Image (cartoon, rainbow over all chains, first blue to last red; front, top):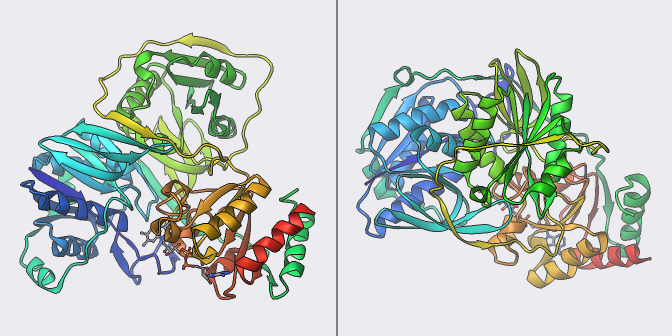
Length: 252
Length: 316
Ligand SMILES: Cc1cc2nc3c(=O)[nH]c(=O)nc-3n(C[C@H](O)[C@H](O)[C@H](O)COP(=O)(O)OP(=O)(O)OC[C@H]3O[C@@H](n4cnc5c(N)ncnc54)[C@H](O)[C@@H]3O)c2cc1C
């Protein structure tokens, strides 16, 4: 079988956000593979290590820099990578069109994608891809097993979690708790340099976004910043409770 | 028409539904407000929501007894297409954000996801949403005749029901066979107020010292205030608390009136789940802890002394 793992590259969480020309400017910032997607790469590798014969293809759509994230996936153990290069920022619905076409071309039967993208703060990509392929989906997976063509596992629902079974083909979103992603070792990083990283042009996928990104602002809510010294605990506690009761009026 | 997909839980219309009704009314789009209720044995839900909209469509079918992303998206897309809806509003719950993309693709519509403001006319839909781990507010726009929108919970004021009730209509649906089979459920502890609906959230981090410390300080303060309990990933990973209580990027997003952070450092991934709370209170012994930068009130000091002192003060 063939597994696609979809990779995003996002701002490193430790980096500050900068805005230029009404959009988040990433040019001079450190970017990393979206952690949520790392769980997907790791899960694909684990399925293979559990004895399933699978080719693992890492896929990404984005600017030239995104190939660093694909190289990371290759160094973790993916077999090859496909990079659809574009500087256009696409929303999840538009992006899913590319991913679904790649899945069809590659005759994949399982797709992994992170549960939430850390840049667009979106959950939509996996479900949109599943819909385009007319495949079922399971999101926020926290445990997964594959026997033959049957997936079983656990995933989060609105309240609590559910166990499920599902027949392939399917789209699965991954998250914290599913596994601990491995770090690429030096020999694997060396080996990954020889692996195939195929480039494709976005033009071939006939994508017309229906959504425009108009502007971006860093939101700074002014906070009161009334910070008390707690050396005298009873006095500080009395003062805080008084502030919350009589100034902020947030407790009775 | 504006189509609102009703969210409900435990036999009651959820707060998120009343918030969607406000979002629709304030959007500026002139069209009848239609509520769609999907499920089985849902007449009470339909009657309740009828008091805040112009009409109610009810799909009361045994096949809809369980939420399923394929069934829900098929149902909503069918009704939206038949009713020529131009705005489809879905709750920004986990399930809403899961099936709404399928609806958007079936209707060949854009998806405006998890929005916090919405201005809609016959020509455009303009919305704001948080991005980059809730550090940025972005404005997005669609210029299509139809748009699917999920509404972020806890942002819009809930609509108040009126005395008179709108008419209800039963609808027929052509549903696919579900492919995802749910074989078991683990409910979250229901003894406490849910994190997403609570007015006050008391959260604990590694600074509470241990699982016992969490019970002694965080749960005790939450009980005293009638608050929900939250936790950082550090202590969920340590196994002190269940994952369902985690607040942050990989946990829940909360936006209560008051968020009290006890022994929490304030990592960006945690902040992204709570930084929109109206009032933030922090207790931490490190004056440099990032949580203080976004706090309205705080005490620099030790959890083990301060929380008992606060409890004593509250009981006075
Ligand atoms: C991809 C990814 C996703 C993540 N998602 C989340 C998420 O959803 N939610 C989340 O919370 N984290 C998340 N994290 C982890 C996050 O980066 C932090 O590691 C975590 O939030 C830290 O938790 P903490 O504040 O409890 O612990 P620490 O950072 O260890 O902070 C403990 C704090 O307690 C204070 N303290 C210690 N003892 C006392 C005392 N006796 N009295 C008073 N104060 C005391 C210390 O000064 C310190 O500030 C994520 C990380 C990654 C990489």
